[in-house]
Image (cartoon, rainbow, N blue to C red; front, top):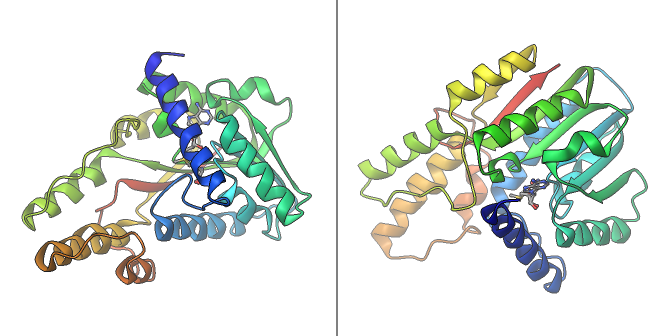
Amino acid sequence: MSSKDTEIKNYWNERADKAFAQDLNPQATTDDVYLRNLEISTLKKAILELQGKQLQVLDVGCGDGFTTIEISSLPNVAHVVGVDYSESMIKSAMKRKISGDLSNIDFLQGDVNEIDLLFSKKFDIIISNRCLINLTSWEMQQGALKKIHSLLSNNGAYFATENFLGGQLNLNNLRGQLGLNEIPIRWHNLYYNESDYLDYANSLFKGVDIINFSSTYYYISRGVYSKYCLETGEDISYHHALHKIAVEFPTIGDFSPIKFVKHFR
Ligand SMILES: C[S@@+](CC[C@H](N)C(=O)[O-])C[C@H]1O[C@@H](n2cnc3c(N)ncnc32)[C@H](O)[C@@H]1O
């Protein structure tokens, strides 16, 4: 592991430890809790649309298990395994599992860069929610995508919620027009370039579809609401009512870095 990879892992361990000490604060993996609700509802809809029953699911980079547990309650899901390289995230996920008395979930510590070595079985669905953006090079991201592909059963689906440069650029252009500061990419993230991603993903999977599920959410929360805060001097809060209602609007445009990508094997 490079020193940057170690720093990133430490960052996630520290976030998990802090949230654990706050009685499993649900903000261990993101401060933007309404965005995560939107991610979860988008993911659930995609899983429910699949034909199979008794689906076996793998969640790579599962964090504290918040989303993993939501998925495990779906009627067509038989079992979910959540894997994360952060021992502290897995400790929190185990605590959530025990508190909820959940029998169809397992959590284990493991690295997505070696995910193929952890399992001998195949999965019907693999999900990654903002996990592969923590890998420090496009080569590592490609390696992880290849391993995810190798663990999918025939006709299996990989559902990725990951970040892309195009939406980030459009968002910052919008913010510039509104007199708002650029939002930088965080130090521990590497966003995909859309066309490189599509070229590579299409070489592995038979169908790849990028969905702008959070564009309106970003337009309202990072455009309208940020401008409102600038004009009024109000402090920005992820819990503001505008974040809450932004989730309810239909999606338009391409103003969010976060995309939902469906891949079929
Ligand atoms: C932004 S959090 C998202 C967690 C969870 N998927 C969610 O949606 O709440 C990213 C997670 O990916 C994990 N992660 C990052 N790099 C990883 C790697 N190489 N292998 C396994 N997990 C990794 C981190 O520990 C962290 O829990």
